[in-house]
Image (cartoon, rainbow, N blue to C red):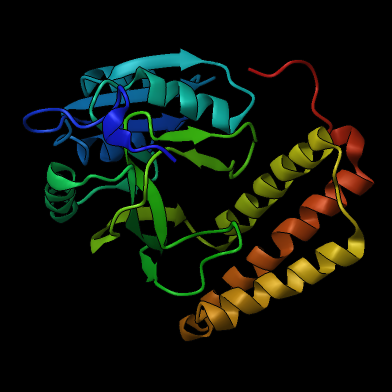
Length: 274
């Protein structure tokens, strides 16, 4: 990996400029609160993917630079947003996330002195109004995300759900003094709908790659992910919520495999992707 300070997106003299990036699709209900929480950024960039609601109007009202288009792959639309940012550093958040003032103070302090390419930030996950601290994992949730990064340091891979990342530069200290509020699900039904969406998108990725795997392998992944979330990540401390999250995390790869194997006609990718 190269030193980010030696790239075109490296350290600048004076106070670093920070761009806040939001990538969304039909999120008019949640976008205002998200953008309000990003007012401390030096630049606001909003990417709207095939949105037909009032999201564009809301973004303009908040003074955002707006990029509208149609992208089949999550990685491609996120990379388009990153390319549109002009700040020295970028904070990438989703429409269901909020950045509290205490976290802004920590972020500004870090980027003023950091020689690194990126930093992970604490994520506080809420289901409804309930904060759930333990048990997240297995591609179904996380309590730390690498969302603060130097321009030019982060590149998303070409996948539909949870795309991989390629980095330039080293990882710096984690920012955990305050966290991003993530309103991950409204209720149990919303959580199960998310599992359905994620597994369908993953099935399409598996078919596109021509590697759907075997049933025994995915059964083992189901069990290992459940155990890791429930015991390793201490989901048991959250009672029934921790059990539910561990079940969803375990079922995610198994459902994706079964959808790709049993219903390929419904999930096979069609046409070129952007």
